[in-house]
Length: 422
Image (cartoon, rainbow, N blue to C red; front, top):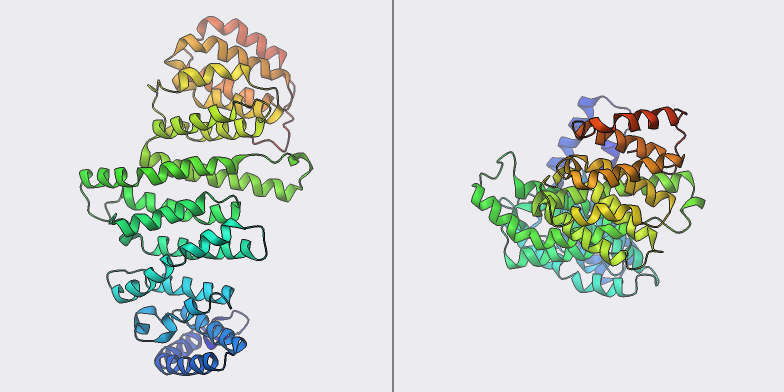
């Protein structure tokens, strides 16, 4: 443990003013410590002493993490590039140091020299990522893939200003993060979600932080549309239930629910950049592929889940997908989770149904039929409520049927705990 770690450790009971005084003292000697670590690392490298290199990098990491040392003061120091040289032999600690250097230099205008040193070296790791993903199940490749994705994501999150310039090099790096998002390992893909959120926020710039005109913002959206479109296509596969989901522990089921909610947030980011209607069309294309095998209920359900989650961004006048999508709901395979999600889709698009009364009757009948399944009943009740709220003027003539439904379904709800309630 480094001195900054000791100074910041909560187990060390000292007065806050004393703690700050120690941190100031450490800051005053940071250049001396830098020179000492440089000498130690050079000596360890000369002797090929990997264990000593690891200890030095761990110490260096502690000084960076607590902001005692900063990347801009290391431009002339071999420590700035040392972790790249040790990635193969000391992957974990080298990865951590690289990420801290990226975080420490996030002010790209102030830290231009550091950026010019770090960015090419991070980009040079792309072939290593491709090589590791080609055999991800072998050896420690899984950890390498996750670690490299962590580095790429850190660069993206901290150098957003640079990426938003839309230069060929910047777009090449964004494409690299698209590959990470498309990785089959949910932990790898999930690590990029924060980047896409920040990039979306930087592009839309609702608070006018970057001072762009509307035309400039629109131009940026056009530039990054292919990448957010690729993300939209990639993350849908993460929504699929496992074949043995019924045998999973409560903790595993909760982790999966959280993953689906995280994916829903990323899809929302995609909608904000490429538009809800365009995102819906891409998901529908994936649905058509999944529906070629009706026994593949997981793929179909994943698409419907995604479609439901983006409903707020879809135009009420959408005509390219919904007129063909919603009528297919009654024809879906009979599976509990699929029925549950498909029933919720009807309620999610109740406003669209209101402006398309020709499909309302069949969809209402479909939802009513789901009341007979105790495990799907909660979804059916919610969809009926949404339809009644959105289509109340058109459903006046159906009041007798609604009362009959109400009288016939007054038992307390007992939803399946595996199913998502909203």
